[in-house]
Image (cartoon, rainbow, N blue to C red; front, side, top):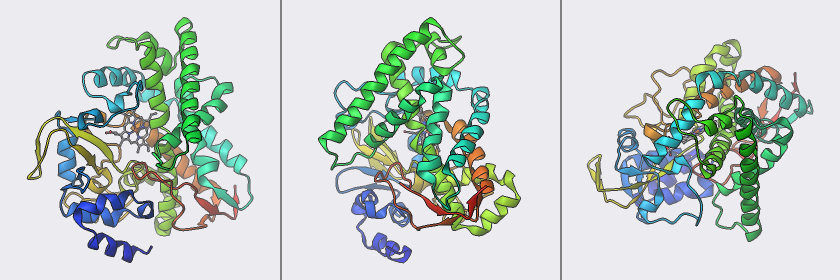
Length: 407
Ligand code: HEM
C-alpha cells in the first residue's frame, strides 16, 4: 500500500473505526496516517467502547493522573488465573515498592558497567554474521544482543545464557496475542514460563546463600531503603526485566537502521559525526517508537481535553501519536536527528516511565555507530520489511540488508 492510499484510507475511515485499522496487520508498515486521523479528535470512543487518546497534552495528563490504573481488571478484563502481576501492570502502593527495589539497584553506574559487554557482544555477533554480502539485522544482531545484556545485568552465568535465549524467544511470542495461536504454541509458551520460573527459583536460592554484586542478589538482600523481595515477586520481577528489555531494544536497533537507510543524507552525516548518535537515538525513539501504545483503565470519570471518559473504561494511550502531535513538535513527521527540545513519549511517562531507558540508550549508542562503521555500503533488500504481528510493540520481523562486506 502506498503512502498516498494510506492517507486516503485514514481519511475515509469513520473515527470510531480507526483504532481497529491500527490493529490490522496491513497497517503495520505505516500506522502514522491513522494516528494523524485519530488526533483530529484526541480523545475518541471507538466502536468497541475503548477510548483512544492520541493528543500530546491529553496523554501527558493521563500518564500523571492517579485515577488511571495499569491493572486492566479495573476495566472488567480478566487476567490469566494465578498469573502474579509484574509491576508494569500494578498500581501504587505495590507498584512503587517493587519498582523502587529495582531502581535502587539499576543505578547509572550499573548501566555504565555494561558498556564494555555491549561493545564486545556486538562485535562478536557481527563477526559471526560473516561477510556473505547479506545480513538479517534482526536475527543476526538485534535479537540476540539484549538478552545477553540482561543476563549480564542479572548475573546469569555465561553457561546458562543459551537457555535464556530460548525462553526469551518463546515468551516474546506471548506478546503477539495471536488469535490463531495453536494449543501447541500456547503450551510451548507456558512451558518456557515454567522453565524460567524454575530456573530463577533455583538460581535465587543459590544467590541467597552466596550473594554477589548482581541485580538479583541486590533484590534478594534489600537495601537501605528497600525491603528484600519475596520468592514469587523476585521471579515475576526478573521475568519483567527480561521481557520488557528484549523486543523493545531489538526494535530500537532495527527501526534505527531502517530509518537511517531511508535517510541517506543523515546516514552520511552520522558517519562523519558519530556524536550525533546521542540526540539521534532520542529522535528515533520519538519517530519510530518500539512501544506504540499502552492500555490503561479509568478508576473514576476523568475529564480530559473537554471529554469525559467514564470510570471503568479501557483506554489506549497512543504514545506514538502523541510523539508526532503538531501542537507539540515542529515538523513532527520529519526525522530530525538533532531535534531539540524532544520531550517524546517513547519511554512512556509518569510513574511507569521506563526503568530500562538508560540501558536501552546505552545499547543503541554503542550498536548503531558500530553497525555503520562495520557494514560497507548497506542497502535495504526490501522496503518496507516484513513486520511482526503486534501493533503495540511494533518492529520488523526481518531486516535484510545487502552489504559489500562486513569489516
Ligand atoms: C516501562 C519503553 C527498554 C524495563 C516502559 C514503558 C515504555 C517502555 C513506553 C512504559 C509502560 C507503561 O507506561 O505502561 C521501552 C523502550 C525500550 C525499553 C522503547 C527500548 C528501546 C527497556 C529495558 C528494560 C526495560 C532495556 C530493562 C532491562 C522496563 C520496565 C518497565 C518499563 C521494568 C515498567 C516500569 C513501571 O511499570 O514502573 N518501557 N523500554 N525497558 N520498561 Fe522499558
